[in-house]
Amino acid sequence: MKKIVIILLSAGIFLAGNFLYERHQNNVSSTTPYPYIFQNDLYEDLDVDAPILIIGDRLGERLGSFSKLMAKRMSQNLSKPIKIQSIAQKGEGLHRTLKKLKSLKKLPLIIVYLGSSEEHYEKRFLTKEIPTIKKNLSLYSDDRVQSLLMIWPELSKYIYHPVDYVRFTRELVEDETEYNQLDVQKRNEITFKLFESEIEELITYAKDRNSYFLAISSPINLDIAPKSSCPGSFDESFRPKLNKVIELVKKKDFKLAYNISKDLALINNSNANSQFIHGKIAKKLGKNQEARQYLELAAAFDCKNWRSNPVYNSILKKAADKHDAAYFDLHGLLQDNANNGVVFMDDIYPQNLYLEKTANTIADRIKKLLKL
Image (cartoon, rainbow, N blue to C red; front, side, top):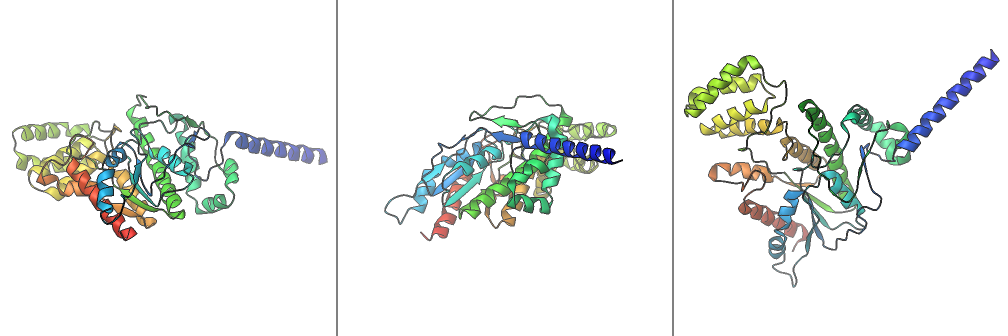
């Protein structure tokens, strides 16, 4: 009997040791269980000497082209203009933006973020790792785990399940994988969760170092149709009604099409195409508030990731409110003016007029903050 107990104890110790060794070897130390890692010293040469910094993706890069306008407006009563620098980059997801910011030796006084339109440009994680990533994010959502890891970050190696990490170098590499639409939906769910963790970390990292953080919502051209509806989101028994609506729209009989399209949108409430068609019909009838509601849903349920998504804006606003960070609703500004003329120059970028308005509004906020 004594031998059996010793054998069982030895086996238990061996298995426990093997378990801990495997996790120690395969996991990186990280409070948040990100499924990617960066090459060491990736942005160590990044130099920012301006008191105001613009960060983000192609949208942030575009806003950065208005830096001189902002600086001129803020510096009217100063002997020399305030310097504004941008490290926003086309193709850059929030994961890289966060890494860049954490690589700076000292944070600038004011940080302006405009992004979320290219969160799928790079492959953040492997599809086969989604079940494990979900488990790790579930563990991370436990306040007790977060509190423990804030004190002992090294314990993350033993708490989280090992994943096959995506490894990033300096070069931005576009993810050209042709995912099936079911995988697109699964990947979207994980990307939203990762974005939520990243934006929380970005804002708290900045504020903990006494930087003023200003978040700008990502503009979405709601007049552009979604590129794809997700599989299973449309009840094919309603196809004849959809065809009828399309015919009525061609005849410009929007009044007759309205009730049918609304029924289709309510029944197929996660189908991007149904939401878009009803939104456009409502807009034609001057029902602008209703139109915006359905066009926002159409953009949210788009099964192709080629621009921003209302979900990112919602996450951004929630995080800004939670951490008392400043927030400017550029998307809302554009939609409020959408009936007064063309507010976008193409599928992605707003007209310069509205970027100038944004730049001036931000400049005025900063000017007031700095009491210039």
